[in-house]
Image (cartoon, rainbow, N blue to C red; front, side, top):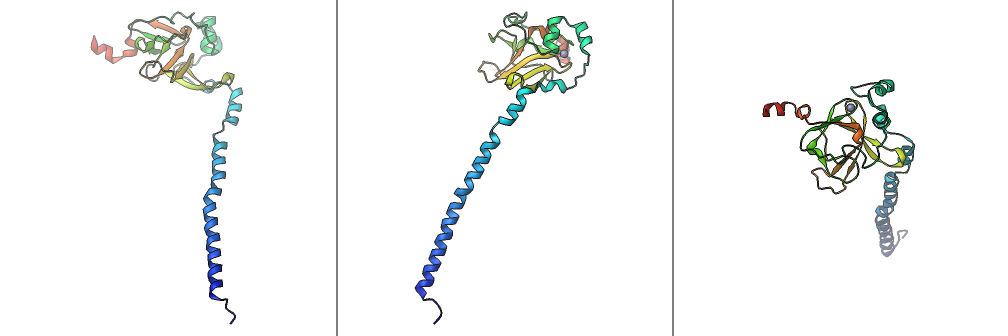
Length: 207
Ligand SMILES: [Zn+2]
């Protein structure tokens, strides 16, 4: 008899099957590590963060309906308006003429091109030192990621001329419908009591 005895076959089979059971039990466990590590690496912001540290706002590369050269802007804006609107400056806090301005009606327009940006009823008291709005006239304001100074902020510009308005902050807990704060430089704005530019057909039908 060259065949192994029956108990030997059983023992061999048992050993093989328990070995494969061990392997398959280990397999998902082993597979977890590379996946988990891959996820961690993917979510690490190191490389985008470092590259964005040195880049300026993407709004520089955008084109807007109103296009003027720096010389042309300097001819229509005063020095401080040019610094804020065209060079993305920031006015001193609590110094702007619209910081504590809370009219019942009217519209805030872009100081560069007069496009209507915010309505009086978008404005709220934030105490932050700059005019604050919880929303804008639809489409009037364009958002860009501003990565200057190593911070990821959302810059807001006039959609018509690209003039720098300020930044928008979210989730600060203000009791407003959007929980957003458009923090705008007063110098980037003009105010008109006449709402018609913003209201359009609606105010005409009211009259
Ligand atoms: Zn504008």
